Image (cartoon, rainbow, N blue to C red; front, side, top):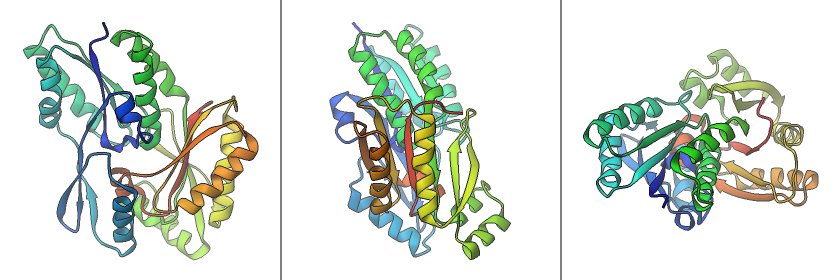
Length: 290
C-alpha cells in the first residue's frame, strides 16, 4: 500500500480535472488586492482570474504573501494524524521562501510524529511547471511507486522541466528586483519584450529581448523546438495572464512543429501573476532545460 499524500500549493496551475482525478492536495496561498486579503485555492475560474488581471491593468495594488512554517504545520498535521505520509512539491526556492518554510515545518512535525515520513521537494519550477511535476508524481503513485521512489524520480524529472516566458509590462518585474529600472523604462519606449526562463537554480533568468510581442511569441515556439524531443503525445502547458489569444497563437506555432503534441492552455493564478503582471505567456514542457 502506498499510503501517502501528494501535496502542492495553489501556484501550481494544475491541468483541468487533474487535481480531482489524481487526488492531489493543494495548500491555499494568500495575496492582497487593494489592501484586502484574498485566498487562492488554485480553483479560481477564468472569470475570477480575468478580474484580477483587469485590476492590475487599472493599476490597483497587488501583493503576495508566503506560506509560513506554522501554516504548513497546520496543513500537514491532519494527514499525519490519519496515518498518511507526505510528499510535498513546492514552488521554486529560487523564487520564494516557501520551500524553506515547508522544510522547517516538516522537521518540527517529525518530532511529534516520528513514525511518519514527510519529504519536501524544491521543484525548481513555477506555475504549470510545478503542476506538471505534481501530476507526474500522482501518476507515479498510481503505478505503485513508494514515497521514496517517487521522490527520487521527481528529483530527477524536475531537472528537465523547461519554462519559457515573455512579459508585456516590465514594471512588475522591476518591482520585484528582477529587471533594472533602466530596462523597464527603455522597454516602454522601444516596445522591448524580454524572453525569460527559469534556470537550473530555480531563479528567473533573462535570455533575450525582442522588439514587439509578435517576435517574442515566435521566440517561445523556437525555444520549444530547440529544447524538446517533440515526442508523440508530448504534454505541453501554455500559461497566460489574461491574454488567451496570444497563448492560442503560440499553440498554433507549436502544433506546426509537433502536430501530435497534447497542449493545454490555462490562465495563471494570481499568486504568480502578482509578480509578472498581465499579458504574460509561458510555454512549459519536459526537455533539455539548459
